[in-house]
Amino acid sequence: QVQLVESGGGLVQAGGSLRLSCAASGRIFSINAMGWYRQAPGKQRELVAAITSGGSINYADSVKGRFTISRDNAKNTVDLQMNSLKPEDTAVYYCDADVVGIGLSKFHYWGQGTQVTVSS
Image (cartoon, rainbow, N blue to C red; front, side, top):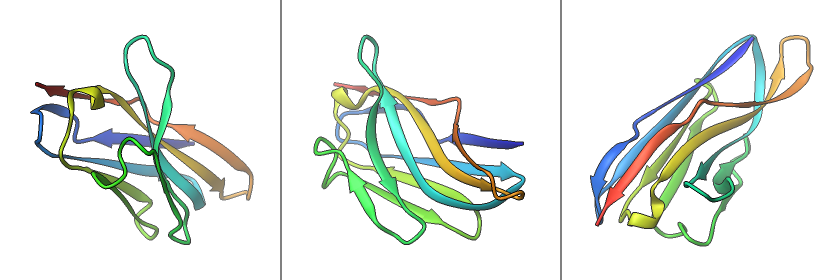
């Protein structure tokens, strides 16, 4: 009933920038928290940044000062602006959302992921 679609991944050089976007669609009443996770080869998935509908934001220490998360509640989208990228940022990035459906049931959804590769 609900899908999250990510876009914006790609290959960049160290020091470069990328902007990831995620759009939620379907039978959505509202979305509470939205965020971005990432998973590098051989590593566990980790939180990158999250933002609530009220604008509260959390960042991983490793990206604080370099990445910026934002959302448009009306459009059900969340973006991640990634600046000063480092090779260690290389990972598959996943959008997630805490969704309240039309029937007021609450579900957690994940996107399929978008690859970010940062070359040295």
